[in-house]
Length: 350
Ligand SMILES: Nc1ncnc2c1ncn2[C@@H]1O[C@H](COP(=O)(O)OP(=O)(O)OP(=O)(O)O)[C@@H](O)[C@H]1O
Ligand SMILES: [Mg+2]
Image (tube, rainbow, N blue to C red; front, side):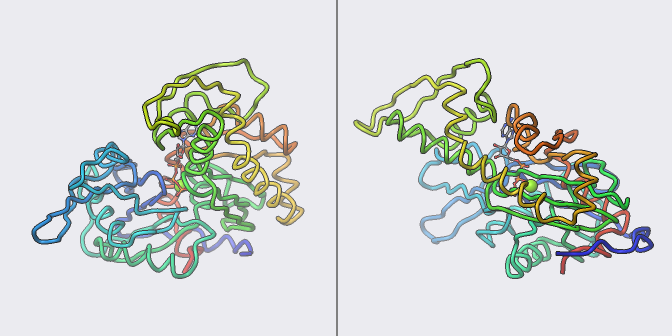
């Protein structure tokens, strides 16, 4: 557990152009100091197989590649290179970052000495951190600093990170949930679980198969989560339709699902998220917890947008919970701003 560091270290400014990258399980974002968020795309890269040569080449990335997930013809192979916030497929990740940098608009103004700041989950191992660092070098970075997702998200959410008072930020992404307590510009507590929106989607797929005997795809499950999903069961009934394949005869079948179905389906991963926040409240230094009880908890990441989540968490934790402005871009904006303020050099991970 890192101790908060002295404040005089916080005011150093970086002279060269800096580029911040949030290489997320679900989405990759790039931020530059002069252009703001210059890229925001799904973390997917699609390769085209060349049968004769036995080679593959990048066919598409981002939104275009994502549309092919689960529906690609045989010569195309869409890949999600990130899992639980870390690289699961190194060469695919490197190619994806390279393409994204080329696609960023306005194009980042950097030469060979570009300073990259990349967000990583607190739970990433040394090997996983090295892989992220090396993928960035291979994609053209001059220097690479890593910053914890929680610190980046807290800065992006506009929390008073340099103050002596503690702030708690919970980032619920596609494959991880990060709970951080920030004070004096450093991370006083950080916890990370490998549960995020992707695990909510899988829980919906399993629930629908077990209860209705219908196998739905990942994108359908995610759509149901976003439209019908609710963190509270005690809300008026709503319904929606989902089409999948009957587990009995393999034929297409459309079923009606309710928001209560989705609430039941996601109950287990949601409890894991709540458990991670409770652990943080029980473990973080007592003085900082007093601050958090007063200031409340701030949610970032796409998972924060689950309907009624702040109310459910407030009820369970007895602490006010609110969603940050623009929760999906907090981490990358915060990483960029932290680099500009010199917070990353002083407090970044090795
Ligand atoms: N309205 C919504 N309701 C519920 N979940 C949502 C909503 N909008 C987005 N999400 C979920 O948020 C997740 C993506 O969030 P985000 O972009 O913050 O993740 P990430 O940074 O790529 O992942 P990680 O930080 O875990 O590596 C997806 O699982 C997506 O389904
Ligand atoms: Mg994230």
